[in-house]
Image (cartoon, rainbow, N blue to C red):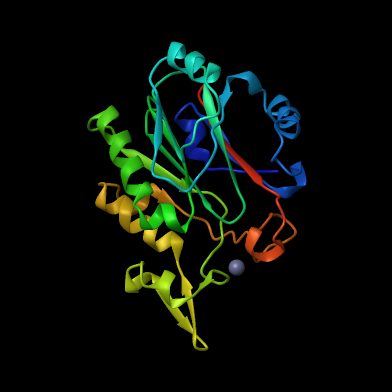
Amino acid sequence: MIYTDPRLLSAGLVGGTLSRHEGNMRASEAQTPVYEKLSVPAQRILHFHQTHSTRIITIDSPEAAQQFQQLPLQEADAWLFTASGWGAAILTADCVPLFLWAQDGRAFALAHCGWRGVVNKLPLLTAQALRQKVGDTPLQAWLGPHIQSCCFEVQQDVAAQFSPANVLHKDGKLFVDLTGEIRQQLYAAGLKPDTIAAPYYCTCGDKANFFSWRRDHVKENLLSFIYKP
Ligand SMILES: [Zn+2]
């Protein structure tokens, strides 16, 4: 099944995060049947190698998309599109798939936000880059399934990198609320609270539906993608 936000469709976009029932998406062969099922052309979905960086790949035209596809696999952690007929994917297993788009669909973004990316402000940087492309058009955001504060226990050195409001203390342990941290950054980029949807799906706590690195320590990934026909 696919987890998604109906506002994506309203903006003329197709996208979401696939549950583990669709299989381990680490290999591109596993992805193709899923795209076929969703009537998305797999050859028009771009990929990169994720490194927990803050590098954003911007695709402004179909020509730019074609050129990108010819390059060796690039290292980056966020996508920004203003072109139609193309899209992109990321892989996660606890990290946050952050979907951002202009309400009219003229531009859209998808970021792979692990805790390092969040600390280094990838959500803020991606929202700001999107804002630059669309002027005053309202932005919307959806946070796909990721590890929630119920399971994201960290040590003091990691906790210290987050704002105290997003560090929970429970039974002498520390837990980080990535959702809260990302919300703060999106507010700083000018998004209104009611434009951000963040349903409480915990990849680590819900084994029936999600892969989780923290829980299983195996290389199994969920696919998130966004595409504009
Ligand atoms: Zn949990």
